[in-house]
Image (spheres, rainbow, N blue to C red):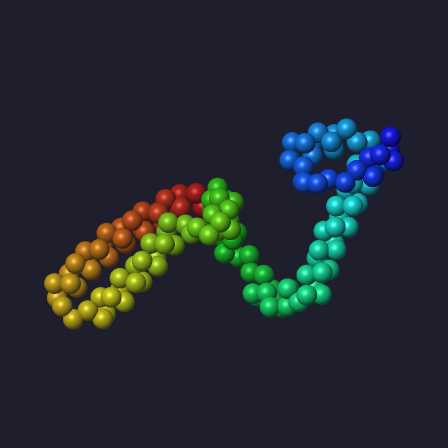
Length: 141
């Protein structure tokens, strides 16, 4: 029976549920062997990536990792923000801060008083929102 298991070739990948079910049925020795195969596969992929030069031009290579900003963030927000960042989203206060800077630049470049007044009103509204978010976050520090 064990020889049959080793000779089975899969035409398509198993679903997560099917893979879990199969894994649960394995003996402890077979689980260890499967774990070793997985680790070997991961290690082989890493070594191939190194050989192909995929790790040569990583951002921040050779520099220490600064985790100060990460740990200065309130703990209740840290994980959520990290997940959002990895998904390509940014926190609302960061978006607002960038928008404030864009509006300030527009104000500097604008010659029309009417347009400047509109931009100043918009800047005031966005600054108020930004300050609200910052005050809210201070409550949890």
